[in-house]
Image (cartoon, rainbow, N blue to C red; front, side, top):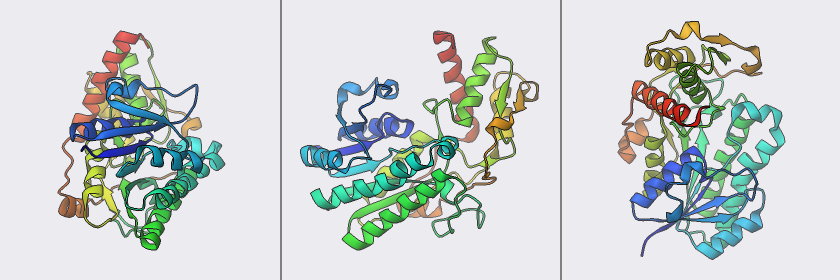
Length: 323
């Protein structure tokens, strides 16, 4: 019989890539979606007929228990969250309820229904925040600099706590920034590549950005979901940093995106103070040595290839949609 996996946040970037990957591995995939008039299925439209979509919410433990009892997954991947850092200052309580306590509700539902379920928690490089060392590893102390980062630290440690307290096979992936053409338009990578596409199409001339000196370790989301699966297959649960180990600034991102279409980024980008964070995270770069050695995981898409992929996809999108 095929393995069955539950993915929360299946309509997001990571959820869509993970669903594709699990289907390719022969899984039955159940995706949890919130009952909402604004839920969009565009990222999974091409595989939707192969999925089982169910209504549930990380704010409601009863709904989580019901899904686990009805569908009996052997693996659960928790990718659902209020995942936009900038929004977390405007909605800190909701971010905590979903991104922090939502993890507890799901872990507790697993403990009640079937403690043999293997669990993956989407932790984040934003937990490192004001970094204590460079590069960051699994043992680097956390110093989050946003309500989102704080909530992710809670989610990470409650996963460790349930693993140690109840013997759950629960692992966390401390994923550094991972992008793709499916990234939301509110994220800086997609804001830049979509902005380039609109400039090429003559729809805009400028892109407003925040701190262009910020540096991140950017990889391809399709590579990173493979690491999630590899963690869950291990005999013993562990936590892993997943990263490329290479850092680039927002300025580097702009230069790569604009040069891909033969333009000078400096003529089209300006700093808008509205997009500056109250507390900035200046440098994130991960050391994925443990994932390389124990999981056999390596990134396959370079930064330049990633940016070119995203620019090309956005040019096609703007050409067909006109926006």
